[in-house]
Length: 108
Image (cartoon, rainbow, N blue to C red; front, side):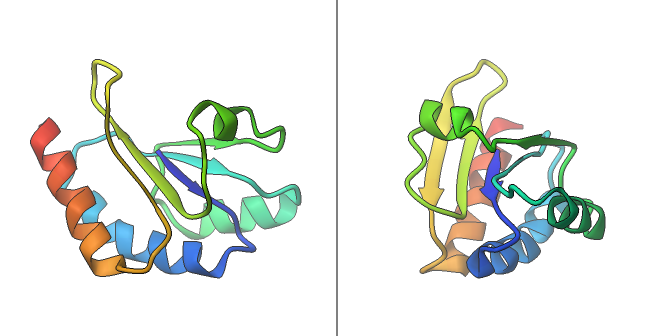
């Protein structure tokens, strides 16, 4: 589950890097968008095919449930519903993408 917004520049970099992780994965990718501007949301969604499902969380219900600390924020959940990995920010983008890829591979 990837939490992002079109106004978040680090999110753009993060999404581009995550597309590499998706190529080697059979995981289901869920995007959670925090834009309040529907046009920006649609433009961003249709410009990449990263997500299998997209949720829009303008009321911050999902953010509250998963204790969102900032954007971008990623959560990897097992098929049984157990949270296996949580991280936010892109201070170490390449390491984070590698960790995400490794976590997904462990689920397969």
